[in-house]
Length: 286
Image (cartoon, rainbow, N blue to C red; front, side, top):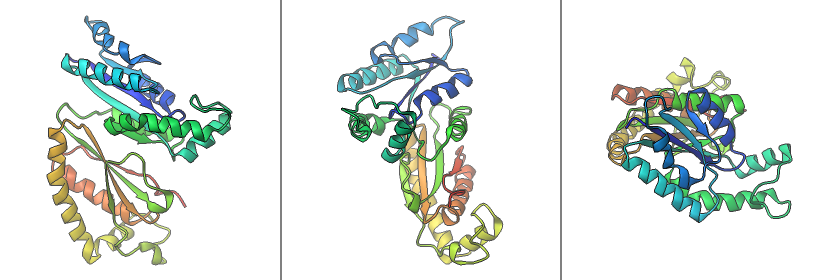
């Protein structure tokens, strides 16, 4: 069966509707607010040569019963040979509060007028589902256009069945930890180009900063050890059936060291045959 099913879920206000619009633009057949118990019926809809083969199902999960029904439906689809994945949209509590206040919408789980209480209840309910998600996208620092670009990047060229797509994300600790990483590494032990006056306004995408970072005695050792560790871990994730893996590389501001290390690590993994994507979350932030 060549059926491909993506379940779109996550926090209210994190961008589920926008994700559905993007996948619809990418020729997915989108079904909104589908009860999990009906997901397995998608396989029946897909029978026949004229039926669509790529579906995006927007699921609003807010109860334990929904969770059980969703897991059961996905297992049934996999047993039929369908390719499935769960896309989880997330954002920080502070970001979600601002979004609800800006739109003056009431959070669906809020009691009274406290949006933050509804967000906390929803996060607790979705914690298990997030842990099982194939792809997590943190939209805290993304505008609508950036979110669309990020999703297109993930879905236009999807990894083949049985292959792993590593996504490297550089970030700055001062802007908070990314919510969507599986593995996290800290390169703040390397000398900071920020304290070199002529390098401060540049980023790790520019050659003077790249050269400065890579010339540090510990940089090559760090990259060598990191590569060896990933050589051990990535095949294990493949054996476990994981298609996407997001690796965070952090420094203080996300402008210099983490950008250089992410780019260099990406080159090494591409040389080993992985279809790596590199994203710099904070490179343009103050």
